[in-house]
Length: 445
Image 1: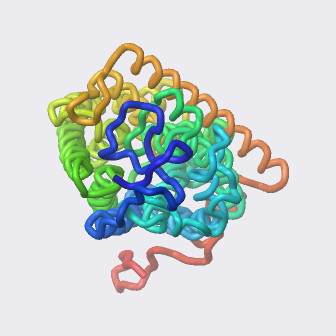
Image 2: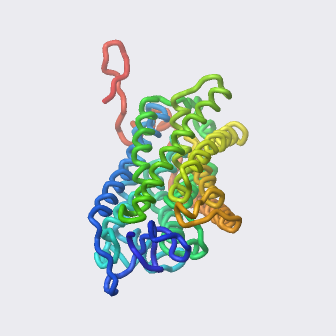
Image 3: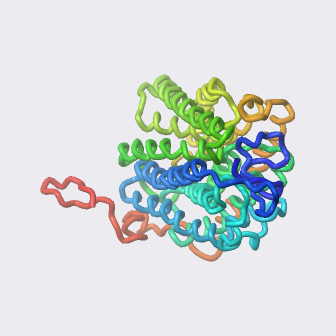
């Protein structure tokens, strides 16, 4: 269902993926114009709202993990992505992703300002498709904020994410989902392992490598979460929204798309649940206590890892993927922070970047032809591996370069007095908490 044609697709136009979840974009006017399906349209709009809900969820998740004097700063960084990236998406972002193919970019003129989109042939309206896809474009740069938490000024951040979506997100979205060169080669990504998680995760790693460690700019560095209930709330919001993220990527509920959506939905739940429990057990054995924060991070690892494979594997494989994601991401968190001493503040690289990397490879291992029309093979694994490595290298290079170029023109790192006062008060003139009670306790504003 969805949209049809070789020029632009949410999945692949040149692979043997069944039409169950290949929404091809094509102009109306042919003799076999597809009728708009009201059920599929309603489904996509609801899924778009769920994915939109994930960005505030991410804000709460990250907000709970940082210090209380910087909580509003990271929440603001997430919310402002909803505004800035959506405006770019309307003007030409959607067209750069799904316009007439230029291998890495679509033509910005094809659907500029979302024009001509009403003429697209498919089971869902073009505007509903653009709405759903826009939510992915918003959350991708927001994911990176957790890596450089506590150390990026607001104006440089806006420039960074605006440039990043043009240089990283749009080209990979088009290359994989818009009929570009990776789609033509046969690379698979059901809901964003390459397009969202690897690209954001490795650019986030590059950004923190390009900036000084927080220990070098702060005399006393407290890395304990300031509000664990916020972390749990954010995890619940993300998990809830992730059903729209993955199941919605079937792009409909008519015919075989309903089975694809159901498969992606149950796989999402299975992987997250297994990863949550496995992470808790690993942490319990390793550190002596099972923590709520660890369980929440484990769930997110399972969600990120199943994302690229959600519509291609059976539930038993989703269980294996979830169980694998926990030791994989947990081990990488320990390696990055303790062994390599890289200041990825909230483990974006280890959980999202490498979780998405593992899930992308799992397609080549567990893909079932009876589920998504794709059979696991050595050839497919090789293509998935090459695409994951290439995406990681490119995203890292661009992320590192962007930070270095921006800092030539403006200060990225907050000045010492701003760090001491807290970024909420120094940058935004607000505080999440203030002293108002008679006993000197903190109460929320």
